[in-house]
Length: 198
Image 1 (cartoon, rainbow, N blue to C red):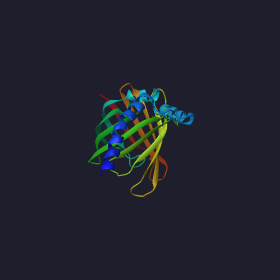
Image 2: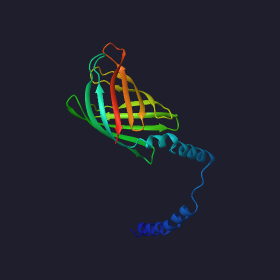
Image 3: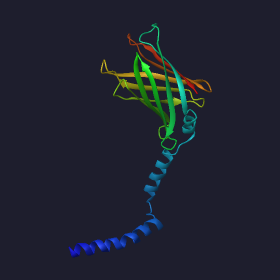
Image 4: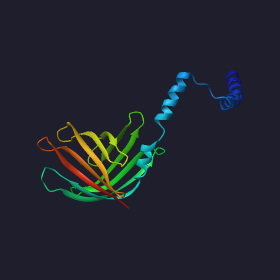
């Protein structure tokens, strides 16, 4: 017991010294570690693309149209969405509230730009699924984007791919479209959402 107490007191006495040394002289990195650190800092620094995303933050009114088959009349609904930047301006988060076929519908999306790959990416979760849609694509300087994404269909259990586009038709209006396989397997327009910024 006495030996243990003595060791504890000796360790406690050295901690302030070690702490002071750590503050005064941080450990030197090897050239390899310095290169690795620089790569991570570059990958994690928000840039022009992230600033462009930040400009779209705000609250939106939504006009939604959904198609079940080519040529069929769309099912229309309305909703709202809020967009905000998180993680120090690195990722855009969108939270959506609406209804789908008479049922309450909520969705949660994320949109970012990967400095490493040079590609935009997005994810989507909603209250009609427990799965995740992941998409990758490109956006131009005007904010028009084209993505390709996939999710697991609850009926067929197979992976379904879709093409999604967004474009700003005015400084406050953005139109989102999703095109995916129809009943005959050919691509059809599945959804259109018009975002009007308040």
